[in-house]
Length: 126
Image (cartoon, rainbow, N blue to C red; front, side):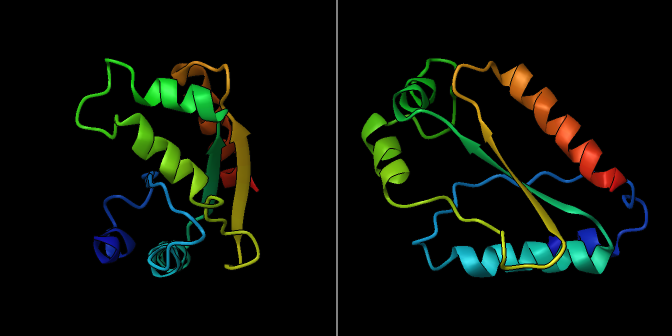
């Protein structure tokens, strides 16, 4: 999939968003994130890593809300993932990556989406 994105002329101006709960202690994270960073560099695109942070209890409350369909909703599993280690950071690993940490505690999804949009737009102008 990344190869198609890198070489597509028709989507050159498209912003791609990849999501994941990548944890530093998971050895799979390094090759996945390296592939994303290399694809961005090959495409000549700015890579903006946005790490969403949230209070553990609020995170569990959000994760178990009735509106979540087809997503992880087990509170014990959510807590285990959160407590399994720090979120993977691109910082210092891949050149040219902008990384921002955003505390979403107490923020509504639309508000967080707007903040992320502004961060990505700002980074694309730099």
